[in-house]
Image (cartoon, rainbow, N blue to C red):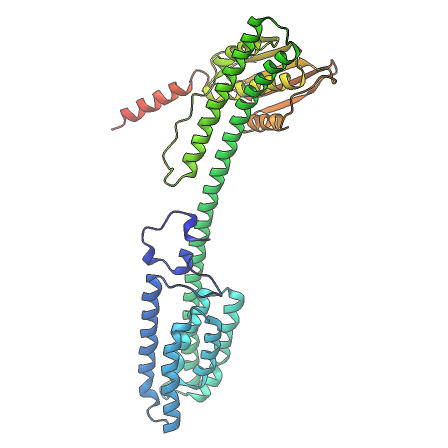
Amino acid sequence: MRADDGPVPEYRWVLPSVLLGDGGEGRPVRRSTRDWIVDVTVFLVACGITLLTLSEVQDEPEPLLLTEQVVGALSCVSVWLRRRWPVALALVMVVASTFLEMAGGAGLVALFTVAVHRPFKISGPVALLHLVTIPPYLLIRPQDDMTPLEWGIVVAALLLTVYAWGIVVRARRQLIWSLRERAASAAEEAKRLERERIAREMHDVLAHRISMLSLHAGALEFRPDAPAADIARAAGAIRANAHLALQDLRQVIGVLRHTGSEGGDDQVPDRPQPTLADLPSLVEECRQAGMDVRLEQRAGNAPDGLGRNVYRIVQEALTNARKHAAGQPVTVTVAGAPGAELSAEVRNPLGPRHLPRIPGAGAGLIGLAERAELAGGRLEHGPTPEGEFVVRARLPWPEEAAQLTGAQVTGEMEAQVGERP
């Protein structure tokens, strides 16, 4: 995961480079400000431990003392390589700290680094190797004021404490990393759902408009000798539906450009959405296009969201009827009551197979089924033994939301907010 996959952290300098996307395991990393601070601190700690052990090796022979000093200095310098080669440095420090006292500080730093930057399957054996080398170290470096057992317990406790500290740091980093990945995944999922919603809306709207265009254009094609008034009326309908389709397309493109641009966090106001009260207008529009549509509406004032779902289902069903059963009568029945369900049924005879049909994407009924499922309902569709094709949707109609439209709910919420102290 890279740093540019999500919002830029406010305090980048307090985060390690692995959380900023500036490096990775097994690759050279570009140190962040925090990494420089930590590395300088760790280097000073290693140097401090090395200087403290200098007094314990003063009585050693001159060649061994010189070796201790040279290896101790090189060990402190090698701390700067711990991010690039943590495992190799830890293995070298295991051998060096077993025989030489002044390499102990760098050995602890190397063990901590392996625990932080490598998984347990790698850091565990390295820590175990440190524990295995304790007996040889006790034999080579006995303590006058402690028994071998006591000194071994102290060394083992120190190694395990440093290793456990590194494990905790790694676990915390992995938690932060997983939270960032989950946040990025949630953002991508939200974008995907929004794109699917826009695509579904555009399919419902544009399929309806384009099928109207095809219907009128087909009438002009098959009736070139129609009266001038009918031709003018069909041409006007084509022009009007093409204009409306372009408007819908322009609005969606504007939404996509806004959501895809930088700084597009502002809410984009949705265009007015149809409700159950707009069904008669939809049916009348289809009648003006030459369809034989009969509407039976036996439902009251449904909530806006429920009414919009029913409207879209009926709209898509009418579009399918124009595509696959041109010239056949269509019956639309909408009925329901609060506390039960709101049902919408679109029924039409199957069209003759030899007639040309408007091609479709094959996603209309799938989208309707998904819309009904998301609304908590179900959708059934298919031919009947009577030779008809039926699309039937049943959506739940909560009783408590029976008389509340979207504007009324918003008004009540604003009133409740205004009454709060």
